[in-house]
Length: 80
Image 1 (cartoon, helix red, strand yellow):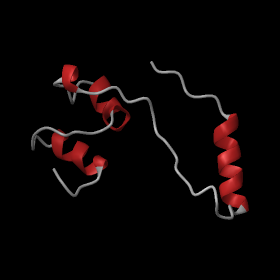
Image 2 (image 1 turned 120 degrees about the vertical axis):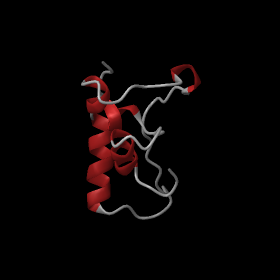
Image 3 (image 1 turned 60 degrees about the horizontal axis):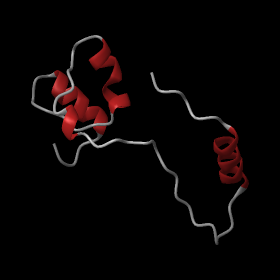
Image 4 (image 1 turned 90 degrees about the vertical axis):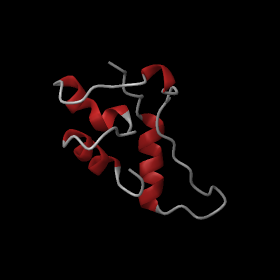
């Protein structure tokens, strides 16, 4: 399923088009209610979370500064 977004990959899997390689949180609802099932779990690498990369040597606008401050001061969500 190359060239698609993860949301459309989940939709395609729900429609029975095959396997989808997506982040767990994208498919969490469908996995929780049994519409999808995780396969090849032993081949899934651990994923510690999202990362944000930005050029530190350039001017950062007030909106980006506020967003970075928010991220730095917000504790990470706990896994369930």
